[in-house]
Image: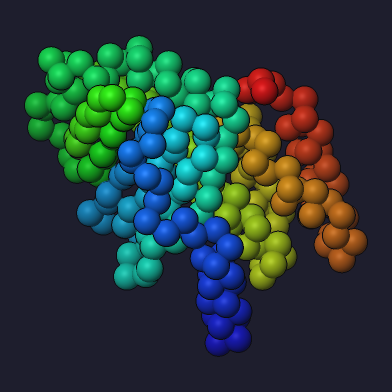
Length: 223
């Protein structure tokens, strides 16, 4: 009961410091991206992200029968340039291109993709696509969402589930190896906190330091 109350207190803290309200204004100039996945089953009902051309935005996710959580996101411009190139490669704004597959496949979750250049906008909603370029776009957003949720959970573990930190660090290491992390530098602040915390197990602090060094050496995106 005490742990549940503490967790709820932390959620209030998160919302108070990171909630972006109604999201980004779609009327601002420059590119604007939106991606969302809705699941008809499973614990995670929906999750997604929206970003402007400066790399500022929000990640959001909702567990079934719970309130949606929204967290601020800041990516490097190089990451946004990568995303922009994916949309251009897909020729996403070409209304003549049909991205929605007509094949009868299992329910894989409804995906909503929206891209706005400031002058033109297009939205595509689909369950499955055979277009490899749109699949690349979906992979970018999936990885970004999984990254941001992992970051949120690592910060949560540092505050209220310290015995769970080694597992979170191991998961981050595996995701870095699999190149499923869009912005590794996002983890630096929480890893630095773990490494500096003398009350944590030595092995956890040592692993956090190794990950910090690894991320520093990585050049996934340049400034």
